[in-house]
Image (cartoon, rainbow, N blue to C red; front, side, top):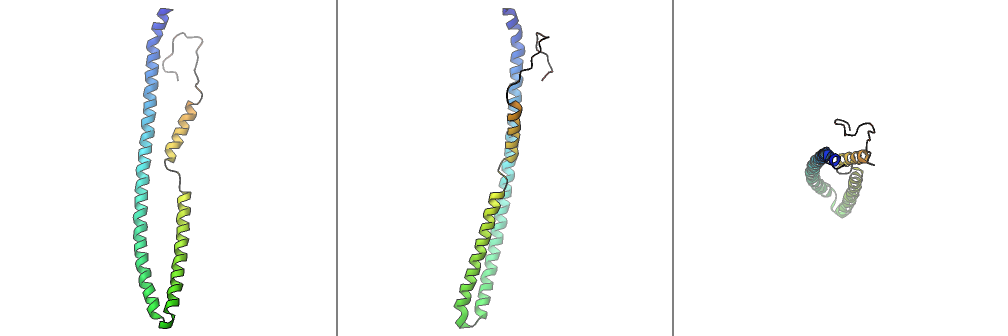
Length: 145
């Protein structure tokens, strides 16, 4: 019996090494996917931030000029009323876009969605351990999953 244990040790060790190599390969792939997703998300966020700030700058400039135009075009006695109405309009517009931004942020896909999906597939595939038993052969067969 001692001979048989010694004879089976190398295939078992080989199988464990293959299992470890496969696990490390899977981990490397998953980390690579996560890194790519993180880089894409950062680039997308930076692009959106630059566009939003540029847009806000020019909208603010246009509103300042338009406000001065409207205020100076009205009679002196109504200028305070016009400024109040324009301020209320600007506030309503700001609230509208704030709500839209909040909605866009809550509807975006979760970060690392592809990575999490792949990990879920891995977990499902590795689920309960299934050991294939071959009652006919005493030795493990190579090339079988």
